[in-house]
Length: 166
Length: 116
Ligand SMILES: [Mg+2]
Image 1 (cartoon, helix red, strand yellow):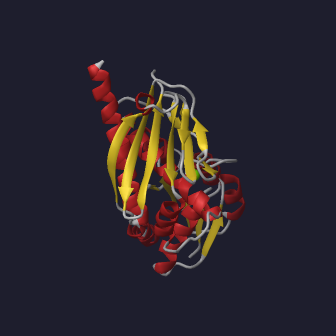
Image 2 (tube, protein in one colour):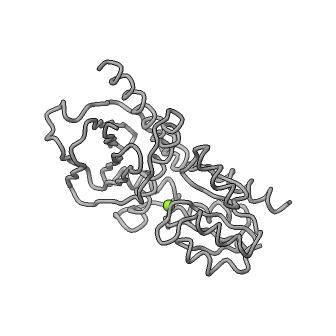
């Protein structure tokens, strides 16, 4: 059991590192992971995630199964995608949605590369976004679901890593 | 010199085009998937393409494109694993950029390909 937890923490650290690298490199947006929690252990219902205003989501298949989501309050989505394009956003338009999709795509791809080196392989789906104040996402019951909260100058957002056991 | 930029993400195409334009490369064409790219690739000098795209992915596009062209193709993708890089190179990709990337990487790849 304890070795499982350590192994999982290593995987999550890869997702944290990649998230920080992607936002810093592509958007000059500096963030810091502030909290890592197992969702099921914290009073959340088992398979529903309460999200911010815009969420990018991408599935893993073909090996280890699961999903990754990144959920932003609108102002952080504007800051992150605005940083990528060098422009300012005031509404969730096609570019903001596309930018958030591409962010989750890059984070998943970077994590995939790191996990592949550890013998964990999977294919990535095409990313999607979900929009709406306080929307919820059902990622399906799974053995391991971990939420990482990040802090930035614009406030906080989170990623959720959902990896099923082999 | 004409550069074709292929990516299903409009934001990613804009990022690539902005980097190239700021470096003085302004003759740019874009496509959102491999199929559209094939129809627009007739007279281009360099191609930058994503891998994961709907309709026709980047790998399939490069294999098709290579049947009639030896123009340099740079794959820009999140798929940075050894297995993926090898597969891309075997399919005819000339060079490889892993996302996330800085604009300077993009421009230096382009300029080194032009010199060859
Ligand atoms: Mg793509």
